[in-house]
Image (cartoon, rainbow, N blue to C red; front, side):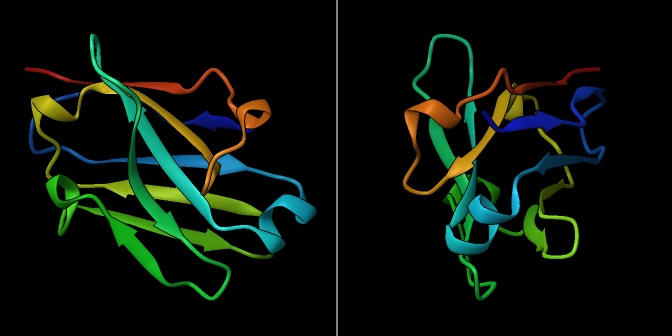
Length: 113
């Protein structure tokens, strides 16, 4: 499983950075991604990054979220700025496409005043 961390309660317009530490084998040979699931909604891809560093984002987070990967630490990050209440969700990391056996518990992000 891949365990995400760094979530919390944050006010609108605030920032958070999520982290996901992986094994070297998973990190080096896979696209990595962040997903989120809001209450009552399906899990969705938020951002992805391939081994070369190319990225993609869902339209709703473009310009606000940044995905990155640290090869030395086998860690994937999601920097989230200008957070909105609609960003409230449980955030997960996984490969992209995802593997069912990699889903961890996720980390809760709540954006509220």
